[in-house]
Amino acid sequence: MKHADIAVITSLLLFGGKCVAGGFVEDATTSLSTRGLYFENDVREQGGADQRQSAMGVRLDFTSGYTPGLLGFGLDVQALLGVGLGGGIDNQSATTVNTVTPVNSDGSPVDEWSRLGGNAKFKLSATELKIGNALAPNLPVLVSNNSRVMPQMFEGAMLTSKEFSTVTLTGGKITDGSSRASSNYSALAANGGARGSNGFWFAGADWAVTKNLLVQYYHAELEDYYRQNFFGLVHTYPIAPGHTFKTDLRYFDNDAEGRVGSSGYVFNNAGGYARKPGQVDNTTWSATFTYSTGGHALLVGYQSIGDDGAMVYVNPGSVRDGKGSLEGQGGASVYLYTDVMANTFVRAGEDTSYAQYSYDFAATGIPGLKASLMYLSGRNIKDRAGSGQEYSEWERDLRLDYVIQSGPLKNFGATLMRGNFRTEVPGNQGGADIDQTRLYLNYSYNFK
Image 1 (cartoon, helix red, strand yellow):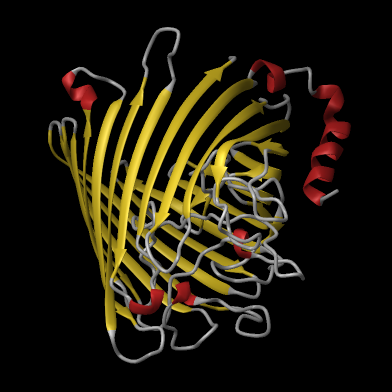
Image 2 (cartoon, rainbow, N blue to C red):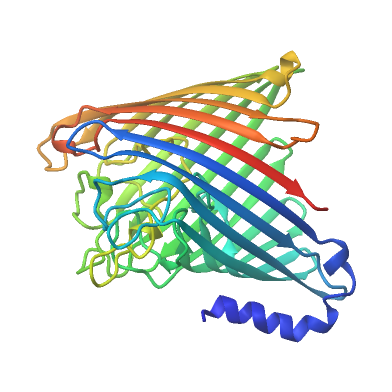
């Protein structure tokens, strides 16, 4: 039994007599949600797998309020069940990542899998502490991935303080993670790292300077892999009634920490060039601008990855056991606009221009219907061998969403996504060409 589970049980024993009083029950909510997913991933060269698979996820969440008194106690519980509906990757091995479901020892998809987790939570004034294995942070230094039938969850402790009206302070330590296609919790690693790390520490502040200006700073350390500093600025300028212009600036500074580069603790630099092979040495910045009016939104941006190495982020799905098999299943997110369907555009030297047009049909009397088209072009990618050659890649993503707004099927939604990724890098250094299709069917019901 892990320490997070012990913390939840201990809290129940200590505060059990209070749980029926005050806001613990009165402010509690329970929700049930389901997600069906059809996932098609056609890797078009190098003998790649043509994956076609369907799965269903069921999620039950109980979120309590807090007991009365100076120190309030609460409890969040989450139960998830995944069911394979057919298909899989027949021509992949057991050590190859399946991003939709866990796999059996022979590499075939499992019929079903499940996960049960929860967080004990404590509140003092406007400061909240959560301890457990159902943490889903959405921070510049750590983003929980929710692109399959189950969300990625993390185990550890997370503190959020809003004692100051314009500043939110956040900090904590994460020890393990459960990937989006896994029922297991595994140790942490940098993207592409195979050896598990002992922990991920983070702390930061979000300062609302004015109602239209947000300034951010975060520091994070993944033990034995990297240190990371993040600076962010988000400004929304009201040009005129119904017209806004949003500026989003992001800067990451990443360097090596601990044993990275030694036996087992190697960062693979997204399969590309590194000035210090196996090490972390990177700066990444981006500038994104969005003009919105009515239902229209036009986004344009530019991102630059430093020449010395690739962008780095937490991905527990790459950790392998002593036999070389994956402890979890892959899948992670990074706080970049270029983290899209098939690619992330994060290799050394890569400069990416991107644009997206989206439209909300509520402006024409069809609430719940949205559409978007995004195009990204990455270039100046440094050759893995350090030959001085540079290469390019691009991706085009189309997305269509609809959520029923009323009636017996209220909150039932469908999302159709289609992505096309192409690379000019020879020798598969940047990944094979990919055509990907996803169809999500989502439903949620709140009992209170």
